[in-house]
Image (tube, rainbow, N blue to C red; front, side, top):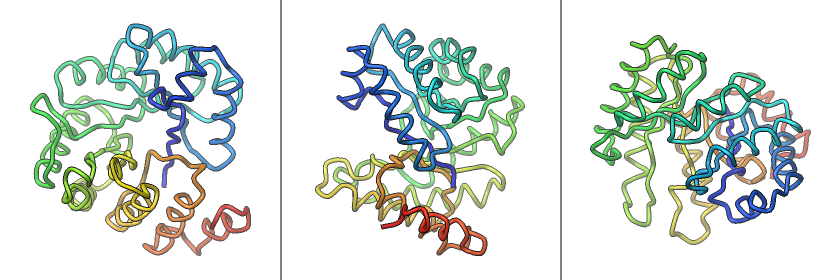
Length: 264
């Protein structure tokens, strides 16, 4: 299970305040904490700084890479911002994200191809985001066709079917779960990924809902997730669910996590 650590995102008030204040040590502690607990990529996002995104994200990239060797997930819808970050990354990054919207596909796809990066592809077009399993799978197919047609290996594609808050659409989780299963079956070799916390927005005890959805998604084939890896209960659920569905050979990853005191 690929873990993309989500905490360095300026939609979080503490992160935005630290960046505004130029508090490098705060951002670096976030990066180190997520590295220690087993992240595979560190997501970096400065999207709330309208008009300053490139400048702020460059500062974040430099600060984070001073304290961790993990590769970065460059998180922006803006091709120009992503392009400005690519020369700064010390390891091949993951681009988060592309959609079927013309501006995104035309601006970001050439960067993915030229730099041979992995890419998160959202089931979204100029007509909006898919809300049914059928529509999600249809958009996933179009994304796979466009990306592979441009030379992106299937193994470098991470399809996000998009899950919406259960508080506004009680069937959103089911639609996403069905789509994950169908996508993984229809396109062998592709990956599925999910920005987990959307599912619980507006509900009490959000972390409980997040854990339940993660376990269900893993049972359908989800093999990567954008999460907070410092959330011990969520991390423990990820390891247990991966074990239960037979994706942890000889239970070694689960046992290792237990010995490291990571399971609660």
